[in-house]
Image (cartoon, rainbow, N blue to C red):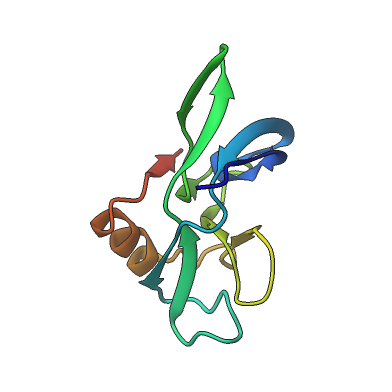
Length: 120
């Protein structure tokens, strides 16, 4: 289980102006169903990380792999964010079109034991 550490904008918690220090095993993936299309090679499915941790207050804590943002970055926001690993690509944070959250992805990730969070 090779653990990778990296810095990312904190878009998963609706704070794109902050950086977070994360760690995860980029090879430990779960494929779940979703409403939106995040990977051009997968139809209504997405490969997400099983677990991500964030370093805060000198401790490693769970970090959301899927998040639901409701009015966090702007008043009318309603969006799902997800850390995905598309086939043949690298880790990226993707979001649904504003106003079209992906409830199916949120539910399927929770069923798979993935850490999810709702903000707003």
